[in-house]
Length: 270
Image 1 (cartoon, rainbow, N blue to C red):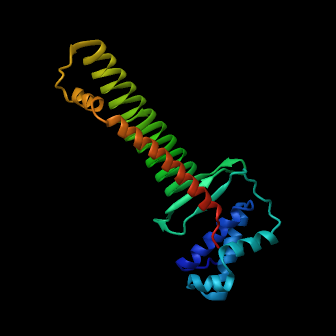
Image 2: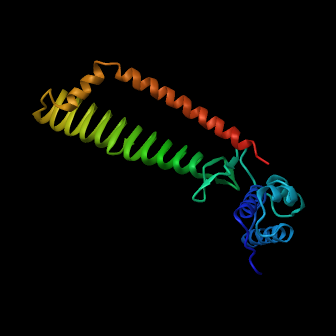
């Protein structure tokens, strides 16, 4: 079968129709290829190989209508979904990747993964990823991995903030890094309730040089050291008040973004 060559507008229409159909029925590889081929051939026969988006929708109908007509006439097995399943991708793409992809819930008993420049879902992978499990340049989630990472369990190539944080600059309940700040801190420079490292300050300290309540060190750290001045600044300023405010604000905004993304995904475009 000769493959039809279509322009970008027609190819996008075919991609969107096939993707929407796959949301409803289970397409095997032969069904997938046949559907694409038939739709490409129909567009080519009726409109030529270089139609505009407006011409395609005027002649064939919008993506949702075409997909619905196909599904209604098909005897292919229907896909199964969890009660909270939603998925939507923005039409705008960068380098072939959706600008925004939102995916919550499971399809055919498989958790869906959001993949986009901005990815939001139970599992998310993107430049900015937000989800229960998030991976990205900026990752935010229960379990997050990224260049800059925020989460309950947070791994960062540069910065991590979370209940457990592992990164060169780590801030958290349990923090491990070159510079670590936390209730339990391990790092070359460490400060916390329990702090261990080369240079450490805290309630209980194990270090080469350190300063604090109960110290186990080779030498006592000079109080003029920048790490001690950093701690004193936090202690004698509104530092923690400001940090707590922004943490609460961040969590509220995070929940709001997830809610907006969920309802945006439920509203399917024509």
